[in-house]
Length: 265
Image 1: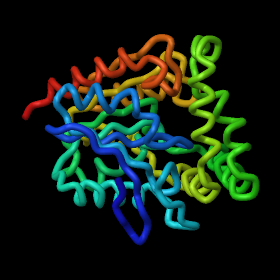
Image 2: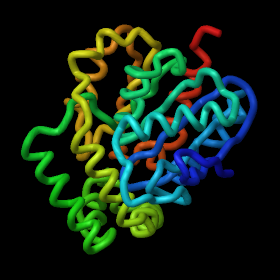
Image 3: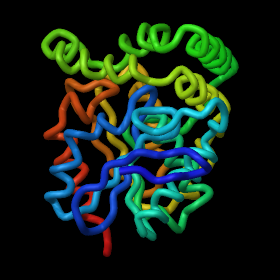
Image 4: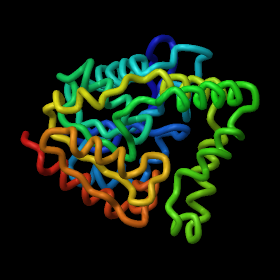
C-alpha cells in the first residue's frame, strides 16, 4: 500500500486488526525486515503497520528532506492516513532514533515504546565525520561502500556461519537502496539529537530488545536505555546480532507479544 506525504509516496504493509503496532526499520534496510513479525503479531490480535521510510524500499527517494523530524512527521502522517490515533511503536536501530523523536514531539501518539538494537546517544565528532564521509561515498558510488561496512556489523557469529541465505537476503536489500536515500539516512543519523538525559522524562511503558552479539549497538548502549527508562522491561537475546528479529524470530516475537499483552488498555 502507498500514501502520499510531502509530495512523495510512502509504501507500507498493514496486517491484522486490533491495537496498532508501528514497526520502523533500520538503516540501510526496509520494511521487509519485519516479515518474520507481521503475521505472528497480527495473529496475536494486533494491527501491524510496517512502512518504508522515505529513501528506502519501495518509498520514494527525494534528493533532499532527510532528518529525524521529517522521518517522524512521515510516521504521523501515515498514522493519520490509516486512522490510527495511538500506536505501540517499535524502532530498530535508525528506527529507534525516529521513535525517540516521536516520543519527544508526538507523545500523545505513542502508546508504548519498543527499542530494538538501538541507542539513545548521538554520534561523537568522529562518528559524525564518518557519517559525512560515508554519505558522500554513497551519493558517488551507490550502496557498495555501505554494504562493505554494514555487512560486517549486522550478524552474530552463528548466523554468519550457518545462515548464508539470510545474509544474502539482507545484503540484497542494502544493495537495492537508492543512493539519495542512503546519503539522506546517514546525514539524518549524523545530526540526530542526544536523548540520554531525556530518558527519565519518558513515562511510557517501554521494552528494550538487544542482541548479545550486536556489534553495531553493543550491550553497553542497550543498558543506557534500560537504566534510563523508568520501569523499562528488557531482554538480551543470545546468538543474535543487530538483526535479532530475523536471527532469533521466535524468541523476539514471543517477547514482543508478551510485552504487548501486558499493556493496559
